[in-house]
Amino acid sequence: WVAASSAVCPGSPSSVHASCQIKAEVDGPCKAVRQEVLARLGAQASGAWHDPHNNGTYTYNSALPDGGLVLSRTSPTGAYTDKLGLSFTAASNTTCVVAGGSESQVFSIMDFSTNYCNLRMLYCGSVEGCRPVAHDLGVREL
Image 1: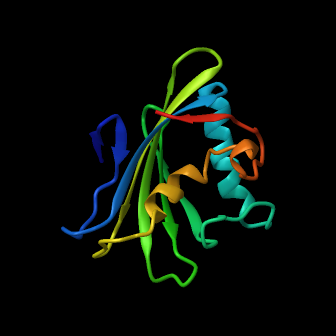
Image 2: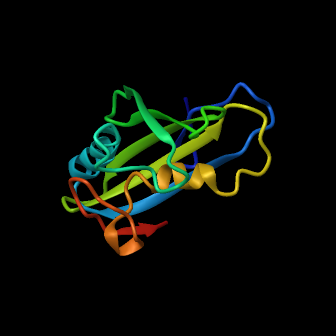
């Protein structure tokens, strides 16, 4: 895992691949933001939440020592897997900065914003048209 531009980048075995890094300020303490990400992953099995970007499947891989998350997302056909990393840094008691990276694990040049959506769909709020599970969060891209 490599920290680049304040994002957690998982790396890829493919030398040519699509990727995305994000940084966003989220209204809520980091504990709530992290809970929302994990709640969305957990709600996939019951059907209470689904990935609105082509209905991929997210998997929890591990937690980082600082509370960040290592995840993966597999396309609906199972043909493609992207690795994701998210970090959560308190900007105040009520605001969290989320930094993240998503990288395709196979040769990929144009992903039509899939790596961006992989990240954004995990923390966006109802104002952005997303479906929260535990916490409805406001988001500003940085």
